[in-house]
Length: 399
Image (cartoon, rainbow, N blue to C red; front, top):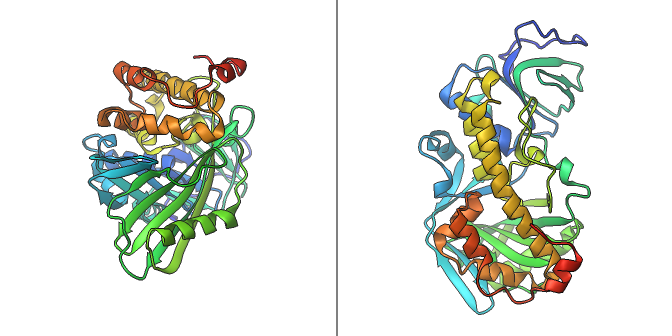
């Protein structure tokens, strides 16, 4: 924990006229607030930042990935420090169809993110809290479980997907991943974004593979499912069986990661333009269809860093929010189509058709920056096998 910042007040009522303790109070120590902190310090090294995480460590236990074009010029100054592996291409596999996509791909680990955050926030005016819950968030203050009250020019709430864990999220992306140390080099030299040749069950199932080095690989058994139940022991066995069937000789399991991400079919509306700023998945700043969060989180982080904290909710934010919501609405409509018009064991055909589209369309869809032409390509043409208009209409699927 950094202790360079002045001790916050323990008064019950913050004085709105007093100078704030911090410029930014970032609640939630995951990817979104990490990117905000790093982006702000990249352009304003003297910024005073408080970072509060309820869990025992920043960053949790995750792997985030992105395409090279997701990082705009200038942002690579701090993004590059987070990257643990890069590849020049990626692959997808479906029964009877395999494709190599010549799109550079990179991955970020929680461990690297945590180390970078701790190093960057170890400066005068910044402080990190871990194992500390935020009990109350206001536009200019955060009340901690310790009794401390922090004041800040901007409060950011990025505590996770709790708002989607109810009626707005009848669909889920869930996975168990094992990072494996191999006794000899494995068969993969490039990421496999989707290997859908595995038996289909519990919705659309695929295996995701990231070969960090010849003898170190992350293998995730992943599902786009109608429910949140996760049989962790069974999925561990599936991952190990998949690696063995690919010819891997296992030395040991290095670590395990797992997740259940609610995928909404609808959202209440565009991100709110008022403090506290709801960011990350908490505020709907993620890809509703793929669950990819890095490109969207980075765009919001760069916006926050581009302006003084008191000016974050100006016309630039409203423009960013409108464009994000326009893109998200299309993704949400695709979710309703995928989960409402296809039987669970037929959803694979939708993704197979998608991966036959031009590479730029695929990349822009993952980045949530689709053009009108991209959206037409995704929707037009021969429909995927398994589409049931009767089911779709019965479930009220509409734009």
